[in-house]
Image (cartoon, rainbow, N blue to C red; front, side):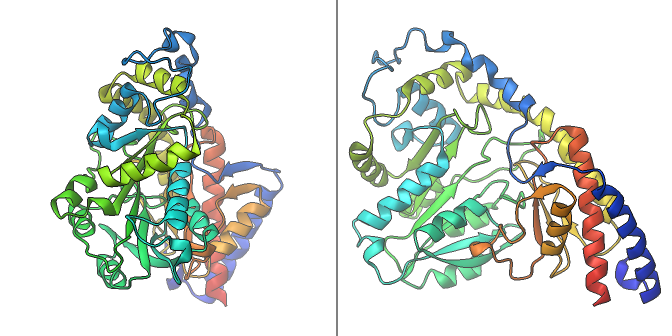
Length: 423
């Protein structure tokens, strides 16, 4: 396919007219397709249906003899903590097994910092300015959460190896910069994994703020699409070497392993941070759902059991990702108007269009019956400075619906790019 910039005005006009006719025909179909969120498909959820069997909670006692139906074990049952710790690569005593939502764990930890401070410091809510570094494109819910707390967000460009560490180190000299929030493995939406060098530079960082915290949202820690998976270095272990372990709070969940609405989540941190979190939990709750923790621990047994289960997820997801990538190549390859990633794991494909074209492409898709995450959502405050990034979620729709939505996406992107060139 010829690059659009090399076409003359007449050629571009003729092509745009043809594509608009194709678009009108697609609109006439009355489509209702959804690629907006990274939800597992029904066939993925069925992989864990056996979890609903009562045998996993009979007898209802954990391995230490305590009754999981009752109060107690605020930091989770031993077998659930051990399972999460093995997967995360941390000592079990530095892991708390919780409810189903890692987003909830991050929100609660930020609330703890706002109200009580971090590491004995002044509560963030009483400080004149609180800022967070936000690698972008990034996870939209991180940004919504920070904005709700009134925390000022600073864009940090994502490079191939992870966030721009020169900028991170520069901003960290400001005492009002209290932390960084990120998805370090198969980042949302670009599917990038932080390199060893980036992890080590973060681990050895000496910020001006003594109450600096990195929210390490390891959402896709076992979510590989291929046998040749990305390796993420253990940031807590690395930070321990430099005396900075208190800077990091890591969260994971089983939301895309078992059931998004009924999995388990875990938080890992330094001994000092775990003690502070447990003190807050003692006032916040009596205990998490230990029956669900018991069910998961018995069903998966160990880390090897989880990884075998995730291979089944990968077998379902690989064809969907490959199909979307093939459609992007057929529809946009050679035009010079688009770049996209081919992730080895995670839940998204990131598409970059010419500056000023993302919102127009999104609007055309919406008008034709296809829902994507809003343009700009992958940046703090919903403002993509170049208006170029769109997040594609291939996991939830059935294959045929996904095919139709992806083909329409390439059509809308081509129309938006040609319109921009005509201006």
